[in-house]
Length: 249
Ligand code: SF4
Image (cartoon, rainbow, N blue to C red; front, side, top):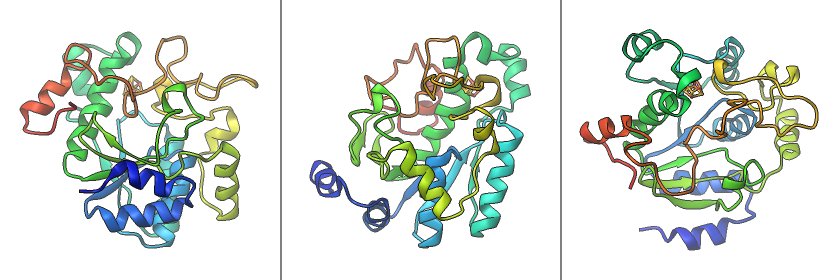
């Protein structure tokens, strides 16, 4: 078994490519869960150019911007490497039929649980480690993230190759390697998620303030590092456990 604390110490400050190579060599079942954001563009560029044995998938909530879908296709074409779609159990229409239209306007946590957390949990149950694009300076919750750490929430290892990077470093890498990016960034969207929950950000605002604007929510729940969710907060995860998948501990 890998000593994660020792690995994190050894890899702190290492180039992202070195961290990715380590993950690919250490974990046969490792995946990049890409949100198709700028940081994910860096990781996909490194994985594809260096032909690393790392599965790549994205959560297709059915509510992505058209520009995000176009970027998805552009990345696949540029690197000739597929980005697998992982989808929720229900279409948006089926969800509306069960719980009413536009759940995201009434209960965004429940909507994220259905459309993001449950399909991600199911996918991660098939992997030993996952690679994420989080950076320490993005949120207070992410400030203590290590390069390699146990993900108690999903029950596997989490590898964060860009954890010490700045936004400027990310954009420099994208420019240096001509990586396709989302045109919405130039229209005031520094952080892009589902279309109904993402709005432009004014100059000087926190880059993530356009996500779930006006609500006390700044995370989908995919990278929360506090206590894991309770069944009451994320009831859909009970279904995940009932289906025989690993439930966050
Ligand atoms: S980001 Fe919004 S639309 Fe997307 S899953 Fe979460 S609440 Fe639903």
